[in-house]
Structure formats: C-alpha cells, structure tokens
Length: 403
Image (cartoon, rainbow, N blue to C red; front, side, top):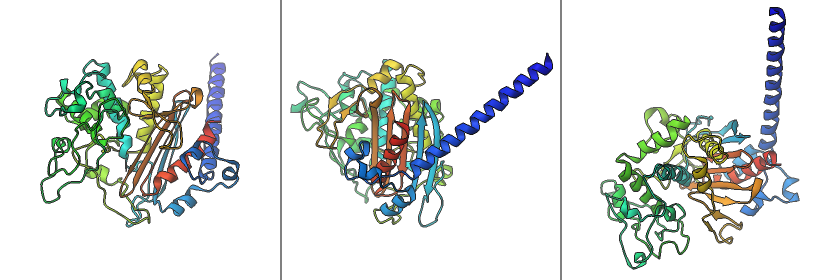
C-alpha cells in the first residue's frame, strides 16, 4: 500500500514537473515571438488593426529601441488572470549604463489617474464619497470656486473622473525663486504655482476636456475625507493589499528605491533630469514597475469577474469600466469611450480598458487590459519617443495573446 502510494505520488510529481517545463517552454516561445514581432504603424488605429504589409515586415524590440532612441523598456504581461512574464531591456541611464531590470522603477505619468480612480471608488463603496454630489460638500481645506458656470450644475467626483467637470487644461510651471507650491497653491493657481486655477471654464457635465488639475482636486478630496496624506492613502488602499512594494507617490524616491529609478531621456536619447511635481500628485505622481501595475490591472479584471474584492467589489469594478461618455473619434482615430478614470474600447472579448501616460522630458507608460479575456500588458519606457515604441510592443502582444 505504501509502495503504491509512493509510486502514485512520484508519477504525479513527474507529471507536474513535465507540465511546468512544457509551460515554461511555451511562454519562452511566446516571448520570443513578441520580441521579434514589432510592426511600424502610422496611426493608433493601426495598433489594433495592422495591415498585411506591416505583418510581413516585423522588427525586434532592440531594433525599434535604437530607431526611437529609447534607452530602456520594461514589460509585464498578464494571461488568463495571472502574471505570466516580465522582461527588461536596455539601460536605466545612458551615462552610468545601469541596466533596466524587472525591478526598475519608472514614472507612470498620467497612468497615475487609473490608480487615483480606483482609490476614489473604494471610498465611494465605503459610503464616504458620492459620485454625484457636489465635491464642495466634502472639501474642507479649499473649495471649488462658484461662478456663472456652476449655478445649475456642480463639480462632482464622477465629472472629475471623466474629465467633464469643466476644469481647465493646464501645465504646472512654478516660480523657482520662491518656495515650492503646495497643493492648495496649485488648486488656487497662485504663486509660486504658475498654472491655471481649478475654476470651471464651462458648465460641468456639458463637454469633455482633459484636465490634470481636475484630478488634483480628487487628491484634496481624499485627503480631506480621510484626514491622511494622499501617499499614505495609496499605500493603505492599493499598494499594501496587492503587494505593490515598488510603488509610491512620494518623490524624490528614498535611498533604496532611487537605486532602481529609470532616468528620462529626450527624443535624441540624451539624459535629462526628472520633472516630477512634488505636491500635486494624482495627475501624474506615481512611480512604479510594470510588474506592480500588472498586479493592479489583474486585480481589477478579477474583481470585474467577481473573483476577487481586495479593493473593489464586482459591482464597483464594473462601474469603473462602464461607459460614461463617448469621445470624439477624430481625437485618436478610434472609437473610444471614457469610463471612471480609464479609456474604453470594443465589446465582448475585445472590450478593453486602457490608460496611457507620457511625461517630458522622456518617460512613458501604457496600461491596457481585456477583462473578458484575462489579458493585460504594461509597457514602460524612459525615452521621449517611448510612447510609440510601447504601442508597437503592445501590437505584438495583442497578436500573440488575443487570437
């Protein structure tokens, strides 16, 4: 009996090892096809629908990195609702030659907004915030100024998340002869901040206008509701529950994380200094790895399917990925909708959510996921031309995984 049981266990273990090796070999083959399957394209539409000429002339990641003067790339791929592989290419810094690894930390730029949206919806779910209430009912440290545009319609969390709050587009310059601007300085548009203030320019809810400062209103909203700094909220709500140990909204990075920081490079591949805003964080203040972002993307897909609720319930995850408004197709050359902090496209198995991020002088991020397929990919780069390179990489991943 014991001999029979021992033999059975041995056979089972051999079968597991054999399957594991076969699985590893399959994944390596898939990675190889992705690495050598990049295609040049001239428009975002071609990213999802390459033509026969593009397919017949594939390029390698290394070739395209050289072509675009992008020193470093990090990639993470989720398949069947699990992290399947990560890869790193090139260098973090052309001056030191330090290699990019799977632990290299990049700026997420506007992909930070996806994390912000998830955080905000977690507080909606707890009943601490309301998607459709005037945000001034919860703001304490500062309030959105009332004007002729807010007589009937108010700035709400839903409108902030969907860029329909009527708030301005603006850069974030500052008077470098003065102290560093606080978040309140930024929202007021007062020196030492040199940006436009967070004051409605048209009636909230009437049209879509991408607004970074609108997301900074969400930062103050979360801080005022919880009484805690935004960085700590992010750690408690998202990073710690998902094991995102390389992610932070604190900058400059601490001495440990700084060793793994990818430096920005311009369109010629020349080294530049980071230009992170130190107090207005939600519009683009996240530093992270492709692996960490893959954990978040996968968690949202699992929640969407009702298979996890570490941060959001299935109902709230589905609300996050629900169409709130259609965007003008002339903007991107594609029929794109806006969800609660993410861009949406397609139906059924082709339904996807995405959030790109691009930041001068040269760091880029692309996050894209297919909740019905359980597929997601994150591509992060440290070159000004990295956004287009990332789209080429994503095209290769789509062709390999979404057949």
